[in-house]
Image (cartoon, rainbow, N blue to C red):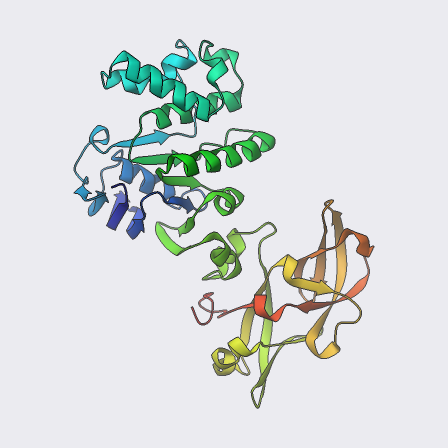
Length: 365
């Protein structure tokens, strides 16, 4: 059994709460991503699972065993670090075999595991080379192969792709997802890259200031962020935020943006927003959930001016002025919209997120 259970983990450095009362259950075979900006506590939490950090309070369970007080070597884990951490004086084969030899396994077992993990990572033709004779992407594959060869119950990965260029990261993301699906390891993966998190994780735990703000499947976190920070952190471009005032009655509410128009409140949010009538709210909307067109109804659209047009091939990204605020809009590349042009924007009601401007939390969550 290789599920992981964290019970109220605390880690304090002097007066800094690096991990602040975090509880988390990770299922056997699950790919869990710890996502957040630098300094949010994600690496400290990973190191607490590994036993590389001594926690101040809480318990760590791997399977049915409390490993809180056990050293890393007794936790049946393997780690892949941001730095490749390969030995330059050893061949690729010896690098992969290093942990196995430390366990004093038989030669035939070592050979079998090294060759098997090398084949999974497509580096079987590099086994006799030295790290200086292979590329950066291949060195990262060596580090992953070494961890895989250990056949540990849990695989912990700390930003393993951040040192690679964009093309290699794209390739390695797909390779890692395929590989970990094949071997079925319980994986905890730390990253600040929300694209990695979205594309690889079964679930994402978004962290800030030592706490988990939101835990869920990638698409759920993307479409319905729990607060403004999560919405602004996940997505490229980030979620747009617009200040609006709720008005109306008789079961129909409108959100007005001063000087540029108003949008309807969808039925699912009408009851939730009634207490905000006459008050401001924050409206969250993704760039791809905004429609552009002169045929947008004036009673359910906003007037904006295009400031910048960025052609990105598959779509154009517009930066628009909306009253006193700016927002990003994704459009088809054949729409031929130009900077300085006035356009009308219609928001997809079912993809609109409403937030309390004081707490910055999503209303109804």
